[in-house]
Image: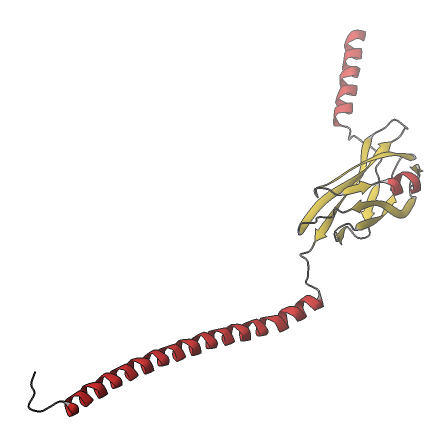
Length: 210
């Protein structure tokens, strides 16, 4: 009877542990500007606010971080988090400051690049649970020509078109002149031939048919 009661108690405890919801303290993390636009060799700074919900059961420790960005050649620097953010937060407390920076490469292909930043920690210094995660985007716009470039294009294209028109007109004029000269020479030759034949008919002895 005692063994049966003990077994029943253990069974009820197991069922309670299985159905009881798992509870873990967490953090709320948000970025002031999660979407930023960058330029080659530029650096973007992401400011964030972290808070511990009042429902947390105890002080929560911020032991580390994890991050990544899809932009090849970009570097994330978490020095701001490691040096400036608090080591722990009590329930209901919060902190705002620079969380990390992203250094962009010298060659920046236009596009949108996604990244994330996680804060790790828990109830003790060895804990590495994910306490909070934020997503961010780095936008690389297509380069815009400088005003001087637009001015060169605006003035250069009409000049180029005018030069092409003049070259075409000059070629047409040379062709016309050449054709006229050839025609004049041919006409001159025909006229000389006709005059020669006429002169021969006039000076020839009418009785001489040889």
